[in-house]
Length: 136
Image 1 (cartoon, rainbow, N blue to C red):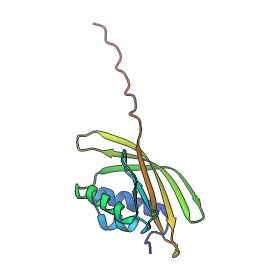
Image 2: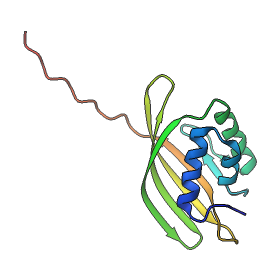
Image 3: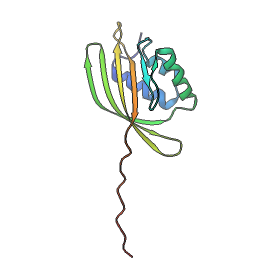
Image 4: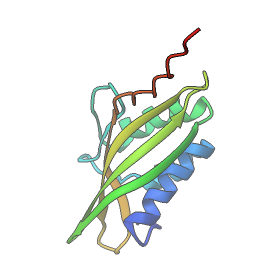
């Protein structure tokens, strides 16, 4: 049974768990289902709760990361909710990686929400403004 009353609560817990390297919360965020799928940026899909949590364990053992997110769209229909999110991850080198993530949440029989699918892809690097030419 999930402890999240809404998909938004599950989403907030996902990002809090990532930021604080909290594996126990990450386990509760994810649906315990063979149909669960996680696709990290530039990686092959992982299927099922055990494989997904194993991958998050390896990521979180490194300390999580500084991540911010903005939900760009939400759609709820029946027992599924789909969120589109822009993520901004500050990498150790001081570089910011921008990604788009799609999350699919599933409402269980008890009415709680959990993450069923996470797919993150890098966004193109934004063009930096060109400095104005300086004449000498």
